[in-house]
Length: 194
Image (cartoon, rainbow, N blue to C red; front, side, top):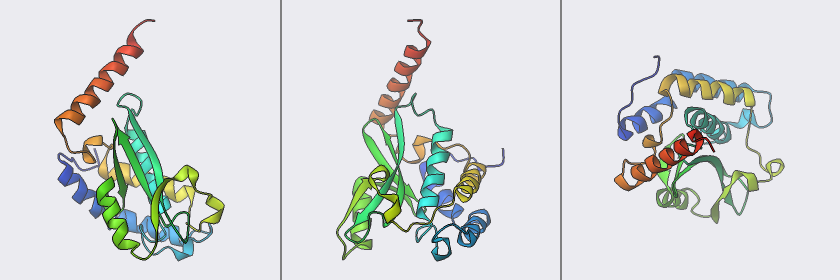
């Protein structure tokens, strides 16, 4: 096992934040800046230009770690649309049993916490969170390189190990019970000979 053993949400958040400043992540960021793909030379950080690559790598890491159907999870991308652009920033969204969390290289956010952050960051711009599928990609200038996404996804898996929903959702009794109930229901449904 090459990744760190992570026991708590707090440990995960610290390790996750540290990852983005680690040698593997910084080498991959340099490779993104050197990529011949459009706009890559403008990337300043994982949150300033590198957000789509980071969010897509996180989405793949999460999906490849989870049995999303069994635990009722939905992993997708979300864009911050402003009055200037359809996608000023991109995050990964995880929805489980009616609760949603957002993640980017800065950390993990509830809807309310993310809204407070965006209000500070986009103080002079009207902004809203929209599903990535609603963004007209040709109109936004966010760098993307599929090979770099693959490298970053591999680094996330190697350093952090498999993703767990517990990293983004506090182990509230009600949510855990609903997740277990959903998993048990799905297992029973798929194993019963109908």
